[in-house]
Image 1 (tube, rainbow, N blue to C red):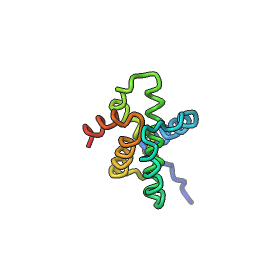
Image 2 (image 1 turned 90 degrees about the vertical axis):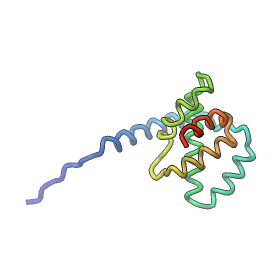
Image 3 (image 1 turned 180 degrees about the horizontal axis):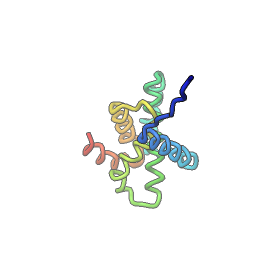
Image 4 (image 1 turned 120 degrees about the vertical axis):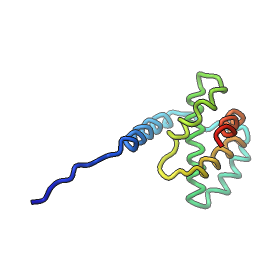
Length: 126
């Protein structure tokens, strides 16, 4: 007789899946990334789009910035250091490493409208 297996799930993975689905819905209506230095962004995209690693970093950075922009919309920009970690997790699909997160943060610090505020989080975190 063949016995069926029960599916055992990891609650933290389930929570990640839920957070990612919510983030996708938020991103569907979120504004485009607001750049203060479009040239730096374009150079990074041109440089990093040659590899899957680089494309992932760029895609993650854009998702992360857009999620933070939604949070900041009705608040002061000074909340960026408070929301950066949570929105970073929401924007991170599978496979994001600390190194990738650092690269994305540095890119946003150099080119994003709220990069100065994100730098405060980065300096405290890394």
